[in-house]
Image 1 (spheres, rainbow, N blue to C red):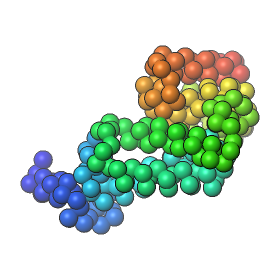
Image 2: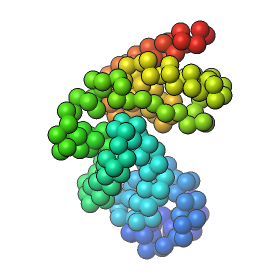
Image 3: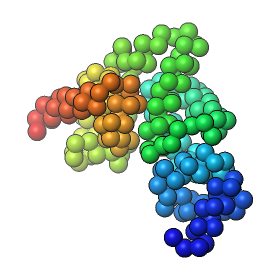
Length: 212
């Protein structure tokens, strides 16, 4: 690492003394590992916090909205989460995968929000299949299918024949690119093999639907 990079890192760790502009900040932290970005954030660096917010907010919003189908709840949960982690940043654990860690926090906050609104927590805990339809973006490639408009519509129909537990696992695996271990952690599964089994059964059902 060059002296300049070392100086920048030291300044970042000292609380963001060296204020990079937005483009330089994005480029600088894009080159860092999640562990390093999170470490800088924990030490009080505002550039690192802003990077985390801009980098992960869209995926987190999509995840919250997919689970609740309520834009207000999705926005409120995200705001609450970022306020919480910023307020106790120095007490947070070290993190290897920022997205997976934040999604795990959001999972709990969504449950809390449902309880506050006097809705049954088991609704979000996947007791009702109709509560969690998956909407695929055009770039999503599920089990290597070519996504045309016709096939995308058919795929969404097939996905919504899965259990809600399977659908969330599929979303986390193929849309959010989480590992089986991270999926198990986010979904509160006791064993990694439980996440593998959910994905395996879901993919098998999709293959049967498409006769592949």
